[in-house]
Amino acid sequence: MAARSTAFTLSLLLLLYGTDICAQSSLHVFNIDPSDYPIVSADFYAFGEDGERLRGLTPDDMIVTENLVQAPILSISCPDPVPSPDLSVVLSIDISGSMNGKVSDNQRTRLDVVKEAATYWAQEMQMNPSVCAVTSFNNLSYINQHFTYNRDRLVMAINNLKASNGTNYDDAMMGWPAGGLTVARAGAHKRVLIFLTDGMGTFTDSKAVIDFAKNNN
Image (cartoon, rainbow, N blue to C red; front, top):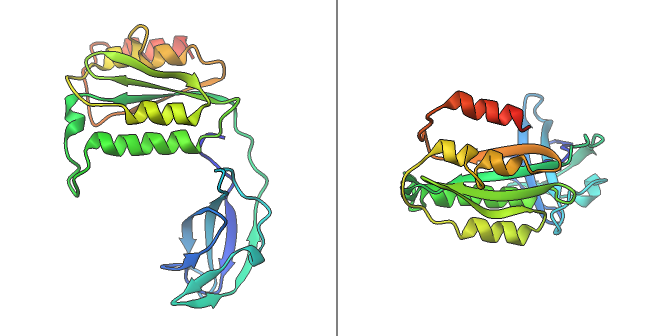
């Protein structure tokens, strides 16, 4: 289940904005809908300490407050999960020199932001039998971690990345043996390439890249 979970639906008497919602581990609230105020609905993902989704929750399992006042939870429902295919995912990460550029609103670099996103994927993707690999590229391409379901190895490979040199998208995609598409074609499951970059590199033949992807999917 590649970083996905079944969404629960809850209905509240009070607005959720700024509320404190308690769960066993982590809770991600989205799609807040106040159109039927004072009844407010929202979707959420709930995960346990092991990173697995929580199912079968009831209103007694949660507390919602607004301005320190507890709000009644009218109902929680969870649709049946949609089966996800087994995946062979390649995270292909730009480590060209431009990735050392600072993000405008703070001191983090573009590479810091990409590492954070890639790490989140590696930690949240449902593994075994699905697997993930990490490649990187500047003017060359590199295999940092081949297919595995070991999250620690993936996170270590991501954290060790450093940015330098130029950008060559042809090699990033089709280079031997470390291009993202080249590595992906060895995947035993549905092949997915996630290409993380800060902008346009150099494609000498975009059609060749598209054909390579089609022929090896």
